[in-house]
Image 1 (cartoon, rainbow, N blue to C red):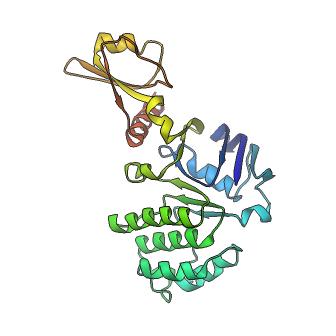
Image 2: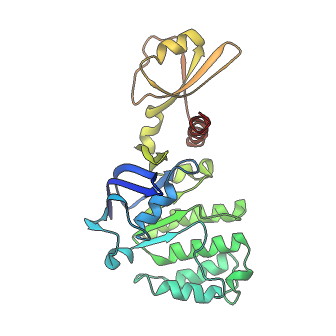
Image 3: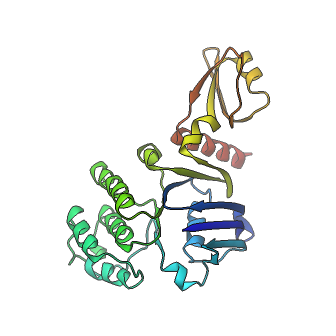
Length: 288
């Protein structure tokens, strides 16, 4: 499956939730779709799932606009952070209802995963804990067999063991039934090893799109004396700087830049740390 995003903007009450976003992704892959709160991630995922329309621009899957396109939408399963299931239904009824939307639904897998996550099929959704509702969402996503399967903050309320089960299932499903998985999560340190590509939204705009193999060459932390670091990064865009005990650390967009002959050291930056720095940037702008 190929997703083409072309100059997409989305306005709510004249405020941009997304602004002129363009990129292309193609599966099967596991994509990390990341950004701080308010970056526009959920807005975009709702657009991709055809739940709302763009203000400007197009989102196409295999060349077809996703909005009002039933033949395309049956290949997209969007498991949102909340609101996926009707509270008066039982677990079994919820899965049965969802099975009607997805032609490749795997009922056997759904039943197996009910046991894995210890869900009672006769229990009503209203009586489930947050973790159980999240587990029901994970089961729906995997059993859908949708060519594009989206998990938006999929494991609220799940403990570490259950989250690890999810990661194992994600790898297992990608081996057995490859598809384009899009995972949006704040638990980046846990999930980052799963990602093949990453996209980061920041302030409603696409900040970067890289493979994980490119990451360490694109974002780096430069360390050394204040004078040496300032000299080394003078031509680069800075994400974050701090000084401690006469030593400066600057996180920059290096994008393959070679620091030749500079008396500084270079360190890698985790995805989690980058999101923290970007969040601080955004809060600083709002204060101003």
